[in-house]
Image (cartoon, rainbow over the protein chains, first blue to last red):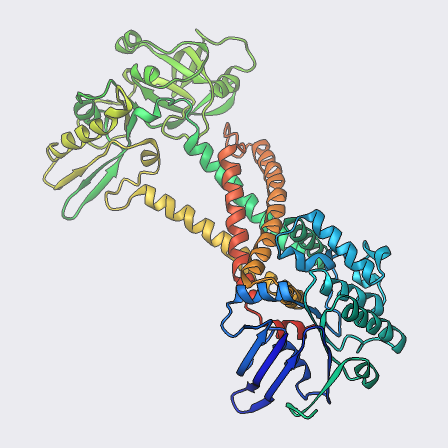
Length: 221
Length: 408
């Protein structure tokens, strides 16, 4: 589903060159639930961003669904992300000015959908994460766990094949973290969604199919 | 999509109320000033009372004589116009009239300032003054040198008070009594070519209005038989003027043109500087400068505001918004803001125009908002919205997604 070949990421300033990722090659199979672990600053999030086409590698090739992504324009990249990928962030990144339902509808705004379709799909996604009674609330009126569930609903509303989650339980206590993990596992099992998750939590990582460890930008496991 | 943008725009406006106030105040105040200015220009230039045949008329308002060391310019004399303009073949009719001059008169020990103007008989035929009572003086009366006058409604009220009719009564100006033959609707002083308090026949002028000189204080309106003949009439006058002999050895060239109302209105009397260009430059410069500051201010505020939303930009990009879509979103949001400012501006303008009209700063200049003024106002709003929205939107849309998401 996702194939990374010899990925390198170098950050350059006027004086220093930092190698964030060093020749990473990784295959993620369709329907796989993969977790990425490693100490802070080892390049986990950078790798996830590259997989999600949010960042470009300095070297190497990213193929998603057998399609190379190297030469896609800004518009094509946006369209690709919209159709194939869903994102979950540690700090949720909900738009506080919009109600829950409008937040969840967001990915559908960039597709050819009617307002009625959007409302229906967003309601379905919210039902899946158990938040049907909160659709008129604003994000600031929700708890951390509820916010992350809204973020998951937003990630799945467009029915993407891949979900990329960057420390989705990082800001939550263990009970809420487990709840979120349950939802992700359910999505993976029932809908066959491919999930790549960056985490610090060994327990969470152990619940996934496979674990990849990074250290100083290189893959060690 | 638009509904979503609208929701966001309103939410953003509510979020930082002080910024919103500054933005809306800047836009609405600018628009108010521009609408009042447009209403003023529109009234001054666009109001065709009493010269309703403006589209087939040309105006001669100045003459310029240039020599090696000398330069004179002023309105032409009666003699010049009568000799060189009145003899043109193309015009259907020509009227000669003087500019207005001021004098004082006293009634019941009260001093009244009167502006008077001399005209010929054609004046009342070419120009369609609305007679509230009576009628214009006739050619016969002019030829007989009868002391008759047409007065304005304001002058009637000021001189005679609230009386029903004044036709046949006498009005004194410059120690001479004139018999009132008619009362016309007022003109504001901004229509300075045709404005006066009392209109008198040339033949009653104290001074020798036929004095042989080129420079004087007269003007002429040439009326073409149809719109098509206007340019022919213009050319004919140009040809006649080119053959006019020099008044004396001091001068080497003479310039005088039969121009449209607007050209005549802003004529500088100087061949080398076009009044229209100067007027347009002054108005354009004023509008530009007046819009520049609030636009820059809005650009700044917009950048700050959009910066605050970098997380939103990151999320939108991650979920499929292209840079172009984001630029579109921010421009739409900004146009919503400026249109809101525009609406407030229009309300403020209505209040400002009401106050200006009531203060009677320029008598009889009744400023109104019409379709043109509103259209200009809305156009200004849109330009404003675009100008102040495009740059911040473009800058923000280029933001790297990862950087944008980290900014929170």
